[in-house]
Image (cartoon, rainbow, N blue to C red; front, side, top):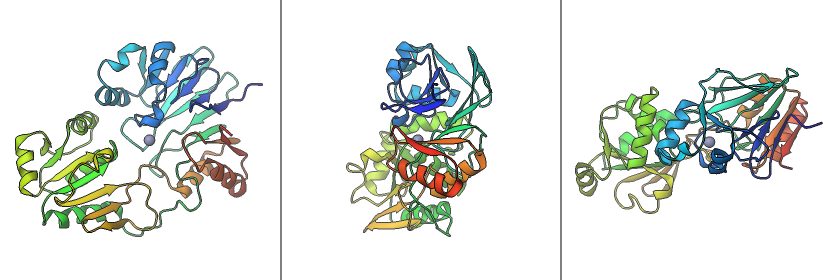
Length: 334
Ligand SMILES: [Zn+2]
């Protein structure tokens, strides 16, 4: 008998008989994109060419339009699904469910003709992500190792705001992160009424505009980094916060103000000093180890597969799920 769920050697998460999530599989007519992070867009070009439908939330579609190009998705048949909306394909039913991770992120549930509920969580943060009850679960395992636990007593957002405010007294502040996380930081600073211009390159700006369409708020001070006013402010060392993709960290902001990196890979301290004018703040969009375990515990599945394609900790997580929760679990691909 065919297993209800699997993860292929190319990173496609297979659910039921028809669905492949976050990777291409030539035997599957439906492709689901859980969210826009690049390790979940594998083989998307091929899926657009070959699949009957490529399924995602409307927000994910809009983000791909700005992060790739508006033409990219026109190569195939994209079907947008709101959270909770059902898509019936032959004898199976597909629904997407909210995941707290990046705008548009979804968990994927397939119910087959035997009434078996098969779930892929995608990437998620817990709590914040509602538990979807299922019989078979494929779960992300980014922080699946028992040492990946955040024990901070302090509130990371408060620490970030204070660090930015203090640093602004000395000039511009540069924040480096991935799209999604950057917009979260902008929203945190806006809510905390940090009253300086927010400078960013075009792509980060366009992602912000999509986020605003879906209800995030950044205020009225977003400024393109090519803009003359932004250039002048940065060259004179005037206070502003500039937001850049992590990949620009070697090229931007050195010797000109304070540089802050936002990263989930920090477990000991909420804020770590990495140099004279450099800090890392532990802002994560993934569950830590206990969050992953609690999700499985509340979901009460009969079997779990941990995503061993995207994470080095899938083996450890499967072991801990068996040991601590008594639920059969194994890493896939093996
Ligand atoms: Zn992700």
